[in-house]
Amino acid sequence: MSNLSNSGTFQVGNHSVKRLGYGAMQLAGPGVFGPPKDRAAALAVLREAVASGVNHIDTADFYGPHLTNQIIREALHPYPDDLLIVSKLGARRGADGSWNPAFSRAELTQAVHDNLRNLGLDVLDVVNLRSMLDIHHPAEGSIEEPLTVLVDLQRQGLVRHIGLSNVTATQIEHARRMCEIVCVQNYYNLAHRADDALIGNLARQGIAYVPFFPLGGFTPLQSSTLSEVAQRLGVTPMQVALAWLLQRSPNILLIPGTSSVAHLRENLAAGQLALSPQVLAELDTIA
Image (tube, rainbow, N blue to C red):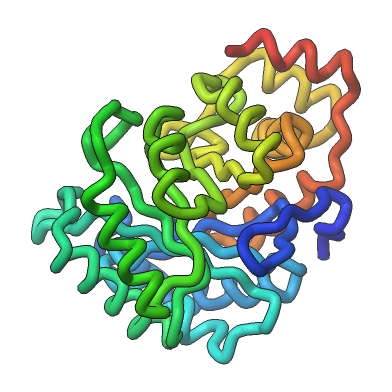
């Protein structure tokens, strides 16, 4: 069992969360679509994560769709008091597994109710509005209309706190004029560092930054420098990549995903890995 307290905590809404969390995306089938190959293994990973001290789980009802949230409920409900489950809105899945924007008032409202039902909750602690102006990267454009819907759902008591995903600094600035933003979830890792300046700005404002694909996602990080550092330290490249993120900024919260208990334990052990200034400088050359 890893001692997650070594990596510190950060405040997100009403919750003080440990900086090493868990992302549930890989609990669904291939392509984040359909049922998992081994449902019992998926349940075991979630239970092991919480037993190891994880108190931040990232999910979405369009994973599966619906199935991932149903697995979370089966594994963990009734939930521990300190567990923060963060979901996201803004997409729906086609019958072919495609990812499609879902930004209308009806779609966003339905998505909140789907999350509540499948997770077995009366209120969602944190919901990230995911921009789909460009599915793969942040793109400038107004998100005021869908954010207005989410603020309305917050006023109705269905959502406590609001976050953003796949957004630009300008969109974050405009959103903060409409409501409190407690977290931002963008694509960021050791090799993809477009948000370097944004992370610092959010840290000064007390806003969590949650990198998705912290290990490269569907294309895992590949770097001879990363591999050489890991070999010298006697750990895996992915553990080094996670440790680098933890040391990058105190407002970074990690949500690496896996469907394997062994891989989960490996990820959580990265919280105990301290990288020297010399190693950090070496790793910084990768980007």
